[in-house]
Length: 554
Image (cartoon, rainbow, N blue to C red):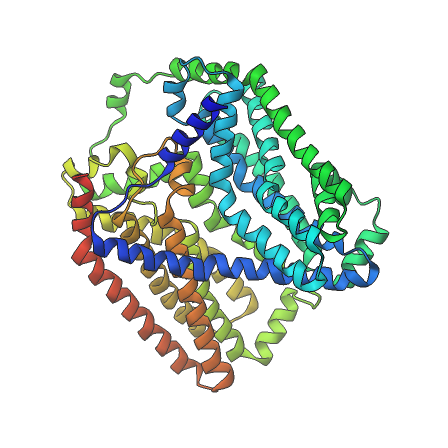
């Protein structure tokens, strides 16, 4: 256990980002963190609490309130699988510290246990908020006894363990017995397939949760042979027991839940002792076998202008690096799938014909929602893809490259922003323009929406890179760490959500309640976004170079 504790402490310490020595910068970061908590963590917590409250309150009449808790916990476990798989793979096999630790007299299960603890630490921040919020919703709905609080405390600490154990066992078997895994890129392709399956399960589950309490009761009482219900119960059997322990205050169920968690961890460590080192050695051997002829590389090199060469370099990094491609590029082009899922979940008709009829009857209302929706969506999507908010961090150990190449900081800065703006804006309007044409929206509204959308994207893109320049994460083992362990990504998302909520609420109030004309609302939006862009551009021009220079001296 001493070895395990020492390894875990060292690994967690290596995850921490460097601290700025500038007092003003530290204060700015604290303010931005407060914004993130206010506009990301708190809204997610409120959503989980209200959803659990509604389910439990509706199911209490049938004395099956544990089902409401179980369904929310199932969703959180899927959430853990979705984000935990990448984290486990990165920590188990692509962390550079393994190369230094491997020669030590450490057993496989000790190393895996430490790495698993680090993964739990990294992956559990948002989940803890979600679990606590869900339990608060249950407490308000059910008003349980003391034992429920004890069971809930245990659930808060242990709910992610089994899903993460699944990720650990699956990753070790993949690395040991699959010849397709030759490098990090092939692993990312496998992860993409697994995540696609998890997303499908998540969407199906969300559809169930979106139903009313009566529909949920009917679903669970009548659909006993549903493959989805059976799959969820088999996939996460511990959820059934912890839900009963919390809702019904069942001591045997709590004990069974604890035993399942212990068994899952023990099984993962047993598998690690059998296959972990062999899988890691196979990966190292494949990496050494892959070499690149320097002469051929020089032959493929083509001389270009500094602007074009740097632009291609940024684009190629995003498209050729699997972690960046799946997390930064793909989200810009798959969002219509989720929009269609949400539309299908509605109880009223949302067909193309119905939208056309509504547009004919209320063209200004459609125009308002297109304008306001494009602004809000552009703000959120630019932060969500995190292209700009990890633009400096992506340089990693090659950060000095920015200093010595014959390209000014301003040009490098603007190119990084241009890539973020181009991919985000293109990804939004390549779908919105055909949709507007099919619905037959007034072209003037489309033009206004595109202009305001551009201002929104540019604002968040410059804000993201500015935040990343303050405290970039330049020390990382793999590309995924730039996304998962970089607080600047979350900070940018918090600012984007806060801005989107404020603009959306004020714009809707002006149009719906104060009856201000759509033209005036659009002009007000243009003025506000122009001011925001001017402020962030001035801030960037004043401090951007200084931040990079200070970082170089560290």
